[in-house]
Image 1 (cartoon, rainbow, N blue to C red):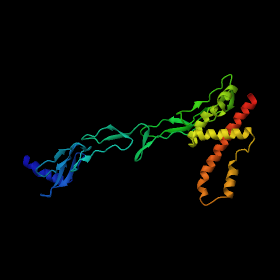
Image 2: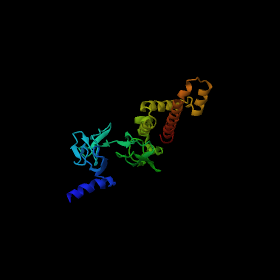
Image 3: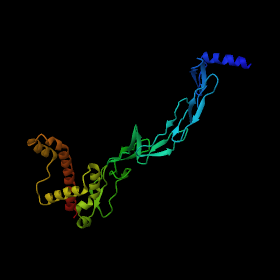
Image 4: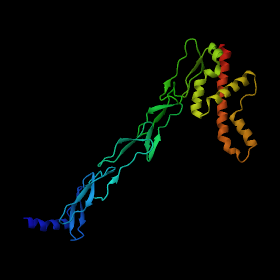
Length: 278
């Protein structure tokens, strides 16, 4: 029986006995026979191929190396290292590679971890960011606002019984309510500081600069000085006398004109409130 098996096995191998996930085919370099060799299990590597007279020899992976599948590779694979803004979820061992995940505040974007997006003023968080997905933002509904520093849209505050509405809320700022005493004690700019903070988030302009813009507009209106220059007027002045380098300044001119208009609007609201109620 042993002699029959020894004679039949090479024939079966040569006839193309199918290899499965735990075996592979090779030709014996000495005899030329087609052999079906065992693969090495996970956590090991191939030390020597099988022959017509010996089985496959495997060796365990050393520290810092691994093989995850049945294999016949001569060297184990090097364990991965987590990159910037990643943390180790599972350390590498002989059978499993290092498993990394983006740290808190970041998500995986194809090749690296990116910081979660911050929702812009007027938008709240619909779905918070995860290690695998960015933050999903949505436009605040009517009667709600988000100023860019808070995570979700919140309902506009209601004025107290002794307060008057100075400026109706929008999607990016709350209702502004006040009393005459408040204006007299703290001034109009202080009253609008929450809006100035929102503008700081929205445009990246310092709050100190925004305060100066509002105060400048208030002085102009109180002493009936020349009103703020409108964007189209400023652009017309700019185009009348421009140089080759000036087009580079166009975005800053547009932004400054827009901020001047917002400051002018705040100043008008403060003066109107004082005229009607104080």
